Image 1 (cartoon, protein in one colour):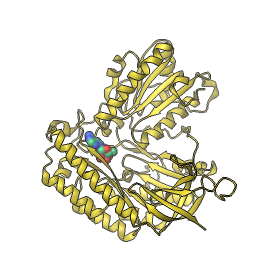
Image 2 (cartoon, protein in one colour):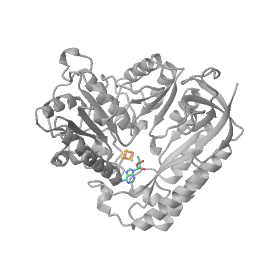
Image 3 (cartoon, helix red, strand yellow):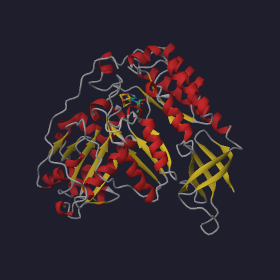
Image 4 (cartoon, protein in one colour):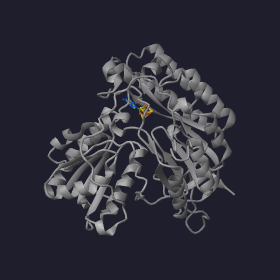
Length: 469
Ligand code: 5AD
Ligand code: SF4
């Protein structure tokens, strides 16, 4: 990457010495209860499991609601302004719990903690503020808070990967495994390089060992996580992300393997070929395009052109014709014109994504784009976003309608939310599939099985079908 970057501050509060999450002699939680509420991306979901792992090793027990807990932690997101607004609202709503229980410890973790730091402690109710690289300090900070001292730990690390922490996972068949942390891409709109620090990877052996343990525990699917997995590198063995994927697929042949998120600049032929080669690597790629205009991509510092993006896409589809694709799109970035916006719609028509995450541009303080201004009026931004959403909706509906009659191998997840007589699962291509359930005694499949389903109807979001033998 050729642009100069302002590195985030790397020191603020000293960290205590690290400790493993298994030593009973250090237990300080004494059976106290903790509740974590998670906002934002899958990386945060995975981090919450790591925080629970750290607390579990110190004698804390996790509970499923704030009113049962001695310690309430919000693991936060700072990616857009409305993500932060939600947290402020949630903190206000927690005031009543604190009034009823003055011993309650309230903590803010994650990207918003890293971004706002001590400012969050100005809120009377917040006792501890902990950034993404300081989760080992949570038990000590909670102890101090119980003695009336507020605490903050927001130092970013160049090495922390929580490799030795065993995450406490919620029961199920799918698990998150973070393989790298941080991001060095510095897209000009994005706060993540400032809140999560520099890229660093776990080594292949540690990831593969974790996958084998998950397979032994009965997990059937794993999603390898990183802000930009294509930058994965094992400094010990020299393995890149394609090597890690292949090693994972080989190590846990009965598990489905997914990953997210990729960057179009680094979507190598080797990675595409590795995906095609292994039956248990899911044929689904999330590849954020952000904009269909080269002028805007340059202002965003995305380091690729739409032509490069299309070429990668064509290659992916040549090698994996039935692959499903999704993307991220930002509407109304600084200086975006009607022509730029039309180019984004054109790119969507060209690629025909199965799904998309679509956002209005939200300026973030301290990013490069912050200084470029936010000059697309709100009503224009909203209208463009709506056009993008409408187009995606119709493309998804068309793509899903073409699925009718096709067969999918569906990993059974359990009852669907809407109707107890129906169960749901996911296709290899990451689509939700709903199918009739004929009762525990007669259905010869259980949660975690893979069954074959013929698609009979569809909407833009969901496929419906019937089991075939
Ligand atoms: N405004 C709007 N969307 C953003 N994203 C990241 N930063 C911003 C921002 N400031 C989106 C990008 C990214 C996804 C995770 O969130 O599309 O890929
Ligand atoms: Fe943010 Fe860009 Fe890094 Fe993704 S690649 S986390 S959008 S800076």
